[in-house]
Image (cartoon, rainbow, N blue to C red; front, side, top):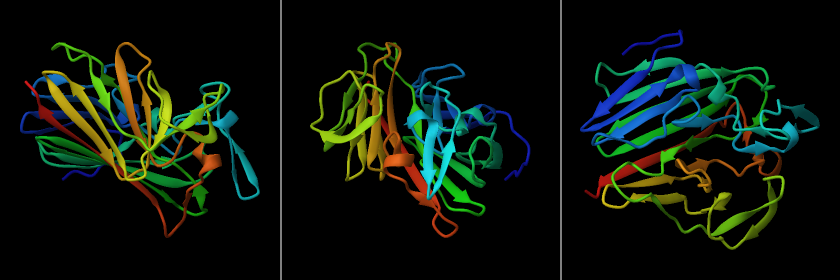
Length: 272
């Protein structure tokens, strides 16, 4: 075991034909996930699979309220603030297993422009047929609303044949306004293409199938998932603790005795 207060180099985990690369310097994103020699994630510094924290998706005009206080966040996707600060932050490697190990933990301290102090932790655990990501948000003092989730960019085509197929059965779809924020109205799920949030009250359960190559299931006890498939190169299945703009519409307080924790597991099997 190695404990470090310094920003680390990439961490590579391997297990039975699966390999995951974590880049703590670039938002602690999963920079690569190879299964049976196939890379599943779109490559590049903006892609892979990054944690969304301490909020997910868009926050309306970068503003949220905590009690009587209004806070303003940078508008990094005008007119909104999007995807949190964690993806733009260098994280510390808190724990790694021995060479060729299968788990690692990473942390960063919440800081400006987020108005509250606290710590975020991400645990990465790999087996031969699954990857589990667990994220926690805790406060060092004042309570505050927060969200957490992941934004993976799965390749649309693995170079083995047909494009990926997305299968899931949400109970509802959040109606999306012209400003790309949920209107607060729940509607029957509509066919894609999507850049939309869906409710799955029994837990997120989405299957990605690359015909003749691989099946991957994204599951989580969280009840919200955003599906984005409007790009030609990749599709995104984003389990998260609340809907876009949830700091305002579904505030979940992180308190000294009640941290926020969320996890997702990706399980795969070969179809070759």
